[in-house]
Image (cartoon, rainbow, N blue to C red; front, side):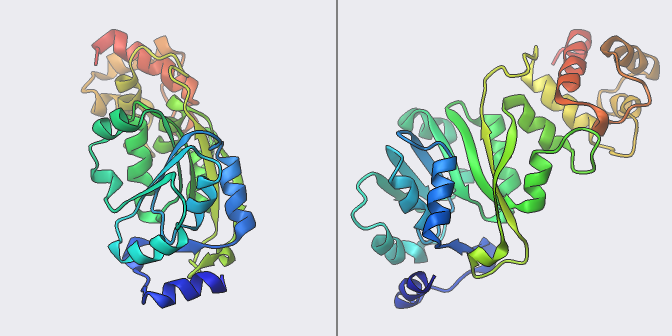
Amino acid sequence: MENLREVLGKYGFRFKKQLGQNFLSDANLLRSIAESAGAEGKTVVEIGCGAGTLTRALAGRAERVFAFDVDVNLRPVLAETLAGLENVEVIFRDFLRLDLRAFEAEIGEYLVVANLPYYITTPLVGRLLDESEKCLGFSVMVQEEVAERFCAREGTPEYGAITAAIALKGEARIVKRVPRTMFFPRPNVDSAVVRVDFERGRLGVKSEEMYKRTVRCAFSGRRKTLENNLVNGFSLSRERAKAILERSGIDEKARGETLSPERFARLSDVLYDEIGN
């Protein structure tokens, strides 16, 4: 930690709270994160590389690392911390604004591995789920309660739309819990590393778009029954909504948080047959 402080101090770096900058420097922890990500021999995209400590650990395993950050003030810091690493390319751009299809066409298949700034977690994961064609999966450090939400089971308070959305592409699992004391500066919450390996066609739905739409509809009114949400979300008559739920094998009084991803898949297939995309 002291070495990292010295490097940052040398270049007059100042943390920007609005960018969610909390860095890691424990070598054993960084090595463990890189190892648990399955980065060996792969192309890795790191988002929010910060001072480059995780970048260096990834570079020791991955074939190539594309390290993104939006803070150009880190340029001299990264020039020092990543010195001598020929398989690393630092890109000072906002990954969320990137032309993802063009980037993927250039680099091919890749993993995302990152100590994510908390404020970009949901939009980033959403983009990988909805838009990526070459991403093999992701291992990301997120706020611990968000990690629990990613991995939640139906019928629990943590289970929500993001859980079911992730389940369409892969199964989320927590591979490491990281206390707030490991970060510099120290955040107000503990963190966890979540790994998701993408498996194309995992749920075998007739339409991924209909599955996503069904999930969004089911959680649009969390306290409402599925029947009510279908009526409002798909502009159905109550009688038709009841018939669709019956055909799907779902009780008309059920709520979205009680449905497993597999049952969402069944419901979305019935909706696809009934109303199309």
